[in-house]
Amino acid sequence: MTRPVSLQWASVAKSLEGTINMIYRVLAMAGGALALAACSSTSDWANLDAFKSGPTLDTVSLESEPPGAEAKASNGQTCRTPCALALPVDAASSVTFTLNGYQPETERLEVIQTTGEPPRLHPNPVVVELTPGSTAGAKKPAKKPAAKKPAARPKPAAAAAPAPTPMTAAPAQAPSPWPTNPPPVRQ
Image (cartoon, rainbow, N blue to C red):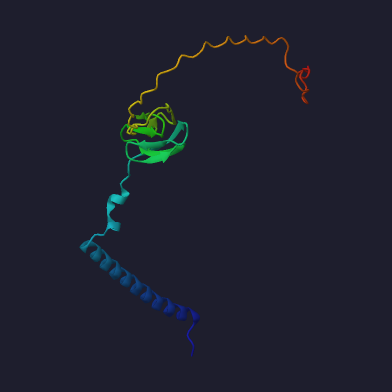
């Protein structure tokens, strides 16, 4: 004889319930074993320092005239202008610009804190005009002793040069393909 359908489903549900309870027990034991193993040795991936925030950074644009100067921040970062560096805003810093044939220039960056806004560095962008001259630390060539020049012979008096003639008329100019008068203004 066959059992009613409702009794068949009841027995299937009861066997599934036992299987599900067994899976929970196995998962609980595996989790306990992992927790016990984690307590015995701590690895770098479990270090909670990963959740600490680093210093706040501000991206500063750096430009120089002429371009191509090396910009070196006080924290050691470098780039060639025009460029940008992400600098920490926890303290004031500076940027030094150097280029061969020009004097180095240093620009100080100060921290600006405004209520309700993150701290930022000022000035931003930093624009520096480099002055031509020798570079710091460049070796100057050694001076050679001057050689004695032979005695100079007296030169004859130079003839007076004729005075330039003043220009009286404008030079002839080829006709231009463009009109020389501005177009009339429409009202």
